[in-house]
Image (cartoon, rainbow, N blue to C red):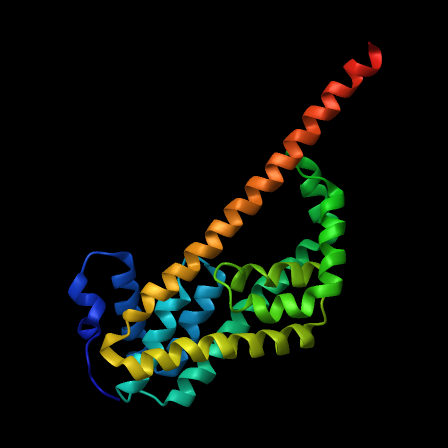
Length: 229
């Protein structure tokens, strides 16, 4: 194992940002405990979506390029870490279940218990594609595991789809970090752009949902006045 300090990462030269600290911590973890550290870092990234896989995964490739472990080990352990983290959230969704979510939806403003039923019906039809492709979309990479548990997707099917989708996503960034080496940070520009697009789409979708529900509430309130006139 090479004894290259975490401070030699390109991010360290920038200094100050939490992404810099994350990159340094990730490299240190991988160089201390090997590819298992890469898997542990990605498992944590699945449980805490604000941690960007677009930083953690290239670090696994960079560390592999230094000879701390092989590229195959980096790909294998990061994918295992993705599956482990996803199963924890899948278990959370299973524990919540449809009944609990219906009650929660009934307490929340602008939400209805029927929304849960419609979501589960949609997931029953499109769940396989949602889990597979969802593993390649920021934010949804982690969150897609919860509705899979709520909808009671077969655990083995969920695991296979998660493994396959994660392997595709992880391979892109681990290989980029391996091939680019110390210049891995050029990936961030493209990854950030993709993430901003996803976040923008989510904000628009939430805005559309809120607008539709508020208009429906206003119409419902005006209707008794109209009927009584």
